[in-house]
Length: 97
Image (cartoon, rainbow, N blue to C red; front, side, top):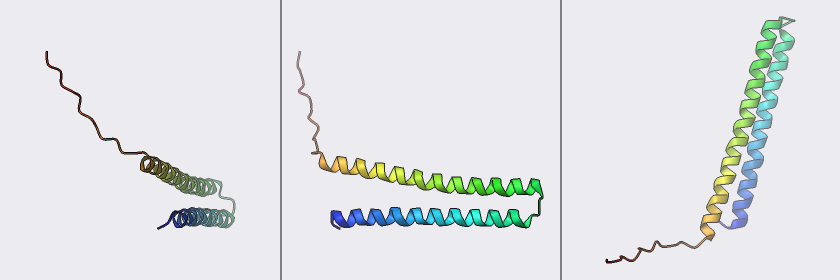
């Protein structure tokens, strides 16, 4: 693969990964709103539903951002090591007393 194809592939992965996270977060929020609407004012259950929804949204978003950050870091390290020349270790000369 050429460098341009690699860059385009990474852009597509980032775009569709972010799209999946946003759609999932909207689905979770929609289900939570529907659940709160159907509970007719039962406050203790509403608090539980909203807490679970907030936890799911924040966990999914944090996981996506964490995985993306690690992937970017690994890619930049791999690119940096591939451009540096490989150094062969030299053995020190042995001194005799």
